[in-house]
Amino acid sequence: MNGTIPLSQENLQRLPDGVSRPEYDRKNICAGIVHVGVGGFHRSHEAYYTDELLRTGDFSQWGICGIGLRDGDRKIASVLEQQDYLYTLIIRHPDGRIENRVIGSIVDFMMGCDDPQAVIDRMASSETKIVSLTITEGGYNVDSTTGEFDFSNPDAQHDLAHPMQPKLVFGFITAALRKRRDQGLTAFTVQSCDNIQHNGNLTRKMVLEFARRQDPELADWIDANVKFPNAMVDRITPVTTQADIEYLKNEFGLDDAWPVTSEPFCQWVIEDDFVNGRPPWENVGAQFVPDVTPYEKMKLRLLNAGHSVLGILGSIHGHQTIDGSVSDELFAGYLRQFMDAEATPVLDAVEGIDLDKYKDTLLERFRNPNIKDSLSRICLESSSKLPVFLIPTIKDNLERGGSIRYATLVIAAWCLYCDRGVDRHGNELDIVDGMKASLNEAAAKTSDDPLSFLKIQSVFGDLASNERFVKTYTEMVGRLYQDSDVAQQMRNVMSNG
Image 1 (spheres, rainbow, N blue to C red):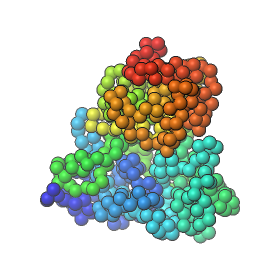
Image 2: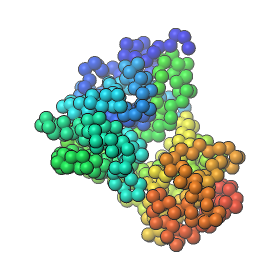
Image 3: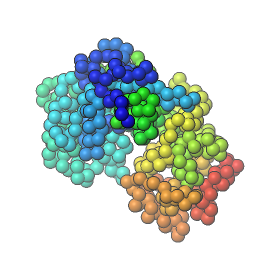
Image 4: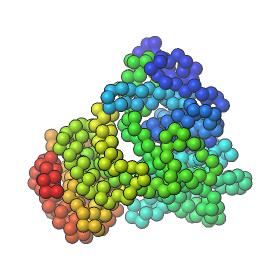
C-alpha cells in the first residue's frame, strides 16, 4: 500500500492519535535486561511491562537487548533492526475496542549463532543486571526420562568442548558468569518468563548441572551468587497474522512488519529474589510475592489445563479456535465442570484470589471473539504440556479419591487425536509434537492393546498401573474408538459426574 508510514524512531511523531507511542528518550536507555527468545509472548508481556515502566519516569537503566540463538531468529532480528527495535502491540478487548501501542523497551538485538563472543560479552557487561528467558518448555534441555540435563544433546556436547562458542542458552549463561566472576563483578539474575511450574528452580537446576560438568568451581560460585526467581506469567498472545499487519496499514497507514496481538488481561507474579537490582515492575501491575507456588499452580491447572481441554476435545469435534469452542455451550459447560469438580479441589489456597471469580474471568477471556487463538497452537507439543497442566490433577484426584472422569476423557481423546489425526469431518489435524512418531505408534495399537498409549512413561508416568484410572480410561477410549463423536462422550461424562 502506497503512502504508509514505516515504523521507525524517526517516524514516531507522524503516527496518528489512534496509536500510542513511547515519549521517553530511547537514545539514553541502557539494556539492563538481556532477553533470550524474543517471540510474541515476550513482546506482549515482559517488554510491555518494561515499556509501561519507562513511560512513568526515569528508569533508563532497564531497557532490553534481545538475543536470538538460532537461524530461526533471523527474521525477528531483521524486522526489529529495520524498525529501530520498535513494534506495535494490538490489544483486542472482548467488546471490540482495540488499543494500539508502539513498544519501545527493546533497544538492541544480537544473534548468538553469528557472534557468540559478542553475546557473552553483552551478558557479562556490568550494565546487565538480569538475563531473562522465554525459550519454551523444550528449550530447557531436560531429559524426559530422568528429569536431568540432557548431555546427549549434540549441542550440549559442543558447548562442553567449546565453552566460548556455545549454542545452548546454558552455555552462554555459564560463559558470561565465568567472565563476571573473573572480573570481580556481581552476578546477574537469571529470570525465566516461561510457562513452566517453578520455572526459576528448573532454570537453576539446568544451569548448575551444565556448569558443574564444564567447570565445578564455577558451578559452586553460581550456586552461591546467582538468583533464579520463580514467576507466574499470563497473557494470551496468538500468533501474528497477515490480517494484523493489514489492520495497521488500513486503519493508521502504519507499516509494521511484525506486530503482536494480545488480550487485555495481563498478569505477572514474581518471587522477589534478585541479586543485582531489578525494575520496579510492581509500579505498573506486576506482583512480587515471597512464594509464587500457589499462583502458578492455579494458573497451570485452570488456564493452561483448560486450554488443553478445549484444544484436544474441540479439535476432534471440528472447532478451530478457543473462542469458537467456548461459544459452544457444551464445551463451556464441560470446561467449567472440569475446573469445579477436578481442578479446584486439589489447588492450594491463593492469597488475594477468589477462585470462582478467577474461573469466571477465564471463561470471559476464552470467549473474547477478537482473539482468534487457534486450537492447533494450543495443541502443539502436548506431550510436554499435559504432564505439567493436566496429568498432575488426575494423579492428585486418584490419591484423594476425587473425580477423574473429565480429565480422563481428554487423555482418551488425545489418543484418538494422535492415532487418526482428523476431526469428525475428516479434516486433517495439524499435529506438531517432538514425540509425534512415538505418540502415533502407541496410539495406533490401541485397538489391540487399550493401554498402549498409556505405556509412554515419559508422558504418563505410572498411570498405566493405577487400577481405577485404567478402568475409567479403558471404558472411555473404547467408546471413542467405537464412536468418535466426542460431544456425546462429553455429555456422558457430564451426566454421570
